[in-house]
Length: 284
Image 1 (tube, rainbow, N blue to C red):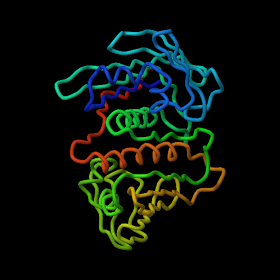
Image 2: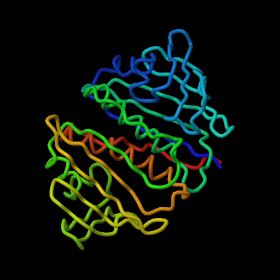
Image 3: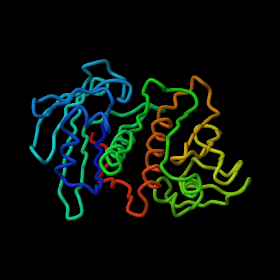
Image 4: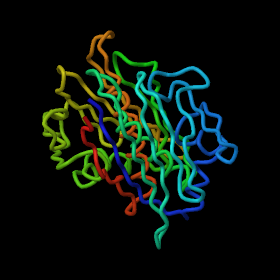
């Protein structure tokens, strides 16, 4: 069984600038993988290292397959011995451009493995942050596959702004939830409108700390800690309660992607929008 993934993202930059972000090592390292060697004009696109599934050694498992000058590129990417194809396209729009990803033939995952859909959602958020705000990228470390999930990210906004993104239902619906319900007090409701996941507030200190119960593949706890500094807020996330041997790469990748989204929403404001999921269907 394989899966096709198709996503679109609106960017407030020109199509030429977005296309340039696909073409060189300096650009690709800011959104796709920090370990890369890219020169599309010379017919080269290689990436390797911990930001990619399987943490492949150099030269990696990706090669440039086709170039559409000014419009996009195609990549051949071997995943778990399976040949897959990635089409990256840029389309001009009156207020900027649209970048699309179409990844076909993605192999089925085992339970707990990091998904390629979350990988591409994170890559697109990195791309937006790089092009629109000059933000540093966030990458999931694919060598960290088990036990608790932990990450730390700097957000260029004060703690109260980050706190609002964690407790206001309208804000949560923008970056993570489907239909959020929040009662910001110990014992209060905290729900994303998902079939599993958040299961209530354990502790809450406004603009300092939020801890929630989490029910999926066992009972665990998620804690967000906010530490203000002169330039904004350090946001620390810890998802704990699993055995060290438990495969949790899916949660670790997911939280990295959602942290990038939260940062983007808070730093960008009203014009931030989620990428559009065009398709994610079984191919055979």
